[in-house]
Length: 456
Image (tube, rainbow, N blue to C red; front, side):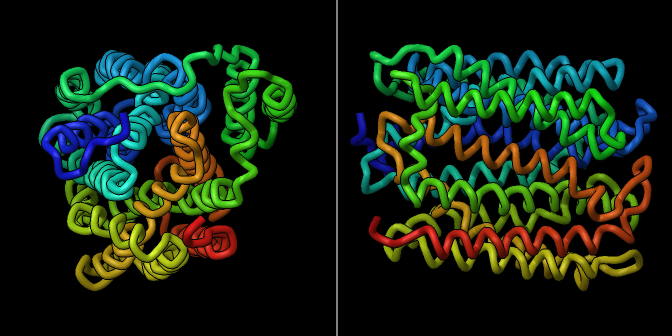
């Protein structure tokens, strides 16, 4: 089925299901940033402990997204989407009830594994059921509404933390997941890829071990001066990823068909995704901490600071997808990251004692404008580069690239920028971090300019 129209009642309900499901996964990736100072006080943790609350989730999410997308293509995208939501509900409950930092980190790791099932399924459902003429609009709406959950996360988290407790940033997922499950089961048609394909067990194991071990080493290595365990993990990760490529090249039914990367558009868009989303994730993480720790914002005020991004995405993302479909993706994918970079450079000037209207709002608006320009066409472009039968795995690869980039940037960037300590001041390192993020987005713009052509 690929004839659903964007303006139909069922089309809107399918988009609602996809947005609800992926939205809670993206929400948890950002809402926790606002809760970190409160979590740190509850468990008396240091900066490394706060990083693990974020990166533990991203670790399994990034490592298993491709596996989740492949399982969706094999057994049904809606089915894996619903299974992921059920698992996400249980793990969110465990996060909310966590009685120690290690338990919270373990729960976050399991939560990321559940999200790996539902995130690729949400986008693959749209790509496989909507008419080709309406896919860009549907993906644009999904991109805008899902990204809103990332932007609104700090505000929602701030309100819950100030009004009740940081634990409710996880418990709020339960009713949202229930609504997503009901909507998906009721209105989303089941789709799958090649039914004759088999489970690629060697590919699943080698990719999961490779990404998991390598990411663990990159998180723990710099912080601990590269002890033997992290060096071993890095070697294991690299060897497992090499083995994964060998396995996929020789497999008759590979989990990740390497032929996908012969497309310059697919490879280039994923490379751009890596640097752009690594920068975006880092900025959401560091800006929220900077506003609370250095400028004296409450959790609610820090969250509200990024609400203009939410408003821009809500108002203009679907339109951005439609414009990109009409004029081609190359211009918005090249221009958007440049606008984002300008916003980041402006954010580097945010210092204690400055007002929100003068120092925070202007760069936030510029940042949000850049997001509106680039997000929808980037997502639509990477999916247009793969056949319909690989919609799930194509979505999963792109999401995995974004999440792993986000994870690595959050793990590594504080050290590169000279930010350290137990949730202490970011004043000296914040500006440097923003310049690094700006450079990353400019690299992404260059990649898009070179690799993306209209009409391909």
